[in-house]
Structure formats: C-alpha cells, structure tokens
Length: 606
Image (cartoon, rainbow, N blue to C red; front, side, top):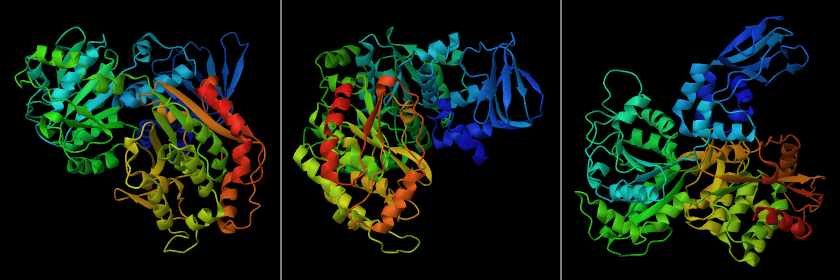
C-alpha cells in the first residue's frame, strides 16, 4: 500500500491531495495483474489505470503513432475530461496496474470540495480538454466562508446574513447554509419560511441535487438560503457537507456557513471545507479559548478573522488584529430586510466583504535548509515593496526567514537578524549537541531563540499570512494559525536528530527533505494567482569558516546531496528562479552579490 501511495502522490493531478485524501484514494482502487500481450481498448475503458510495474504501448487506430507507458504513466478515464484517444493498450511484459473505477473517482471528489477544486485547477494548468459537465465546475470560482462562534447569542447569524446580503448585492450568486441547531436562524432575519433540515432526510441514501433544489429558499435572485441543521431532531451526518458543497459549487460564487459550536464533529467537517472563518469574540478570554480549536483543526490554509461585535462589547477595551462589527441599532431578531440593507449601505460591511472578495495572490518559496541564505536579499527586497500577496507559503529554514521578514518592517533590523541567523555563533547555539534521550539535539534553545524574535504573536494576525508546511503527528500539514514562535521553531527541527516541538499537545517537526512545499498544495485553496520562487545554485555552498558545528554541517550537506526537486506544473511566467553561482557560505558576500538578481525577480512579481 505504501508503494502505491508513494507513486500516486507523484501524479500531477493528485499532487494537491492531503494525507487523508491520498489514503482514501489508494483504498478506493485495486491492483490488477496484466499478462504480456493483453489488450485494452483505451476509448472504452471506464476506469483510471496507473502503471505500477511493467511496460505498455498505446497503438493508434491508424497504426502510425506508438507511445510507451512505464512506471507512473496512466491511461483511461479521468473525471470531467474529454477522452479523445483511440486505439489499444498492449502489455509488452507481465505488468501491474492500479485501477480505480469511474464511480469511485466521482465518489472521491464528492467527498471533498477542495480536492475537486485542486484537481480542476491542475487540469487547467495541464491544458486538458474539459468535458461539458466539467465546464460547469471549471469556471466556478466559488469560495466557502464560515461565520462561527463558541458563544451563544454572539451575533454570528446577524453577521452571516449581513455578509451574504452584502456580497449578493454585487451581483454575486450567494447561498447561506444554516448549520446551527438552535437559536435565531437566517430564515428568521430574512422573514422566510424555514424548510425541513437536510439532517431529516428519511430512509438511506445521500442527498440528491433535486432534493437540495427543492429545499433552497430564494430571498432574491442572488441570495438563497438552505437549512441543514436548524431545529433538527437528529444530528447531522458531517459527511453531508462534502456532498452539499460539491453540488452547490456549480451554481454559487459564495457559500456562507452559519456555524455554532454545539456539534464538534459537524464543526470540524465545516472547518475542513471552508476557506475563511469569521469568529466572533467579545473579550481576550474568548480569543484565547478558541485558539486551541483552530490550531488543532485548521489544516488547509484557512484564513481566520477575529470579529468583535460592538453590540455586546460596547466599544470597551483594546482589540488588535481583527475586525469590528459595528452596532446595528435598529436590529430586530424577528427580521427586517430594510434594516439590514441600510446597515450595509452605510458601509459597515466593506471590510468583511473585501476580506473574502479580494482576488488573492500567494507566493510559494522553495523549501530550503542551509542554502536558504541565498534567499536573504530577495526577502529583504520584498520587505521594501507594497504588500502584493495575501499568503506566503514555505517550510524548513525558508519559513523561518519569511517570519523574520514579517516581524521586521525596518530593513536594517531585518538584515541584521538575517545575518545573525546564519552566523556561526547563532548556528552553534541552535545546534548544540546535548544528547537528550532518543535524540542528539535538544529543541529548547531554538524555541527560546524563536520566542525572543516573535514573542507571543500569532501567525493569523499577519498580512500576508505565513503558511507553514510542518510534519504533525507524522503527517504533512499546512498551518495557518498558531503561536508564531512555535511554528518557527518546528520549521527548523528535523526528525530524528532533534526533539520535536510541541504545538497544541502534538509533536511537530520540519519534515524536510521528504516534505517540501509545492504550488500545487495551494491549488485546493481559494488563492487565485500563485507564484513560485526556487533556487538554482550552479555551485555547492561550502563552509570555509571552521567555527560552524562540523557534525551538523556534515549532516545537512549529506541531506542536500540526496534532495530531489519537485516538478512544478505552473505557468512559465509564475515560476521564478534565483540562478546564482555561490560556493562560499558568507552572508555579506552572498547578500550583496544576489541583490541585483533579487530585485529583477521582484519586479516580475509586483
């Protein structure tokens, strides 16, 4: 099974899958043995076939063109793609093929809105011909927004209603899903008759598209409502969320979820499928109580906004890093559409609407270890420019450097801290051999160093949002929330040499070099435009300064020799390469020599 998974995650159209999805995909198929000389009609096959072992040839009808398929090649059915190839597939030797049927492929994408989104975007990048059914999805730029609170009567339903109405007024097709079992409903605020919740669906079977359409209520042409949980007498099956979003994503540009904290399984599934979360908090204690929930369950680069409702807080106390929902003086829980529209027309929803409607851009920076020193002048150059990105994604030392850039607006201070990070003094402090039980290096000095730099700041409070690819509980995960100093420390400790860094009770570490970032990881997110920066050093960096810890230097140099580069299936003008010829590991020399090239690359981005 591991061999199958390792091969599957190299396929271009599966690169965006997370660990759980890859497990599910590998379990959905079967291994088939094909004898030498056996033929398959490529046009008639209704399964996706991936070569695990052996060699095949594809022979066209006219018998003019022959293509050979070996390990990792695939043929047959792909969802939402036109299969125009004709001819026969013949095994040239006894071979093995991983086979997954058409129904199982559709079932897989039905499970995850984000898996479907990433697949669609990658197929566009690969210039596949899209089927008529596929075009309904391929042209969808839908976003999923969750309004959440752990507090009863916090104003989340009001915010859900205001956000949905505000976006729909821009001629955007919007639907609000009620996932709260009790309390005021969006149906109340819009004075609409509440439908039977989808949780009470009768005997067996998943929700069909026709059933959904029958239960959708129209407030106006662009704003619709759907009741999933309100007043339900039974718990909602969380897996219904994937099915609902799969169906709705064809028609709606924005799907807003009104979500309470009363059903944690339903909450976690909604979090998994969402892009943005507005969480209502009325005090510092409210924020501190919700931090662990996000840190544990947000693994998909979700963007969190903390919201204070001034109806309850009465403008008291300081509130940093969040949005303010102004008091709606004429609010009536029994509903008044004109009151909502007046509140929106006064401009109160502009910050909320801009947060989700802005066309977002992401910068993915190659995962790099000691050679991340080559990125220093580029990050310093980016620090001088206007903020053109909503997300910056990386791992290993590259992530640590990105955090330094975000922490220091002053370029002099940034350059000084970059120089310190790569200095032999700080290097040896971080990598002092202490031989704790089961490890060679303790992580406490790295944690202390990161805490001195970042203090108690949290990742989600920054713009652009730093996204960290970190190994958590043995699985690759994208962190978008959490205490920044812990994320920074975890990004540079490597298993099994270091003690892991504990984040929210879970052992975490870099995962480098096995886990490296790819632009494909962000295809499953709401990001509209992705740039990828990589390093190409024609020489090998060497440590001429003998003050560096030689044991660790030998280790990272051996890792670097065996590092494999990931293929990036991205538009040519979005793939930027920092091409250098550097062999001496000296910060000032590298910083100066790479400055002009860094500025040239930055000009292409901004």
